Amino acid sequence: MKIKTIIILLLLLVFTIILFQNLEVVSIQLLFWKFEMVPLMILFPLTLLLGVIIGFLFFGTRKKKKQQPKDDKTE
Image (cartoon, rainbow, N blue to C red; front, side):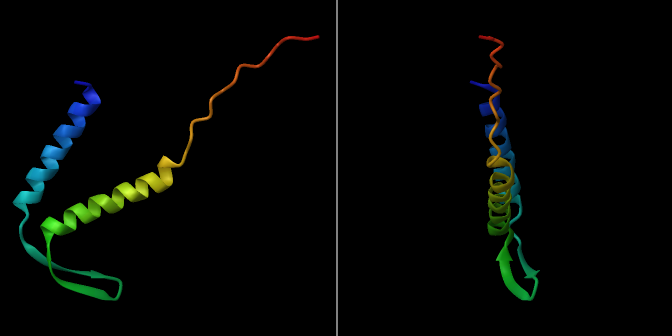
């Protein structure tokens, strides 16, 4: 297995453990909206998804420019 795959699996395992240890229901307020009775088990994945989307929007659109070697041929 590649090291990247192992790290992703370990992070997913840790996220799953955290998810199932936080089964409480909380109320959240976002600007002028107030949501009562929101389970943390739903709030954590939504927050993670929002972070992934923001990450792709800001950093996923950057393309690495391939540097082309300069031609030193003179005619």
